[in-house]
Length: 162
Image (cartoon, rainbow, N blue to C red; front, side, top):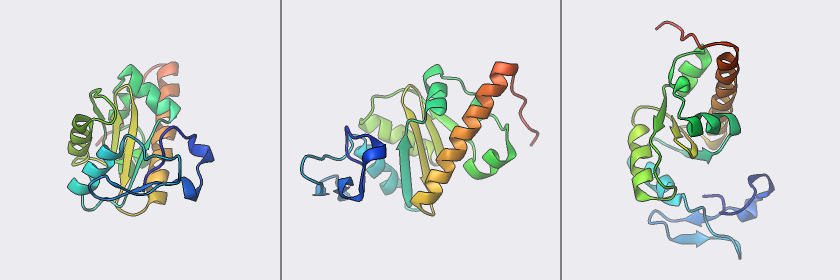
């Protein structure tokens, strides 16, 4: 199941959700709706990570600011809850959205984490539990990004010890 392209995520209803099969062929979509162009990345992740049950690809503003600035501060261990719940936050180099190359590098990064920041693009969060859990992790990532942003505005970040 995927969100449709060119739709405000706040306005999406259950009927707007698009379904594609494992090859990416449409199974269901409401008239006038088409699955996001990012579906190759989702399919690659599901094919290469059989433990993943939910994927959220989003553009939360503060975390995306880190992606645009290519600031790696979120890769540091700065908050205990973020370390325990998110694992290492990894960044991938910029690759065109919707490309097979992006799908490959994000899937490779997900071998080491469940949270990936894509430079100049957005984030991917995966869960081996549920879409609700993936959303919780996305919210934790954005809250952590906001805290790190504030810390940088006040001076610098100080990673916690191992």
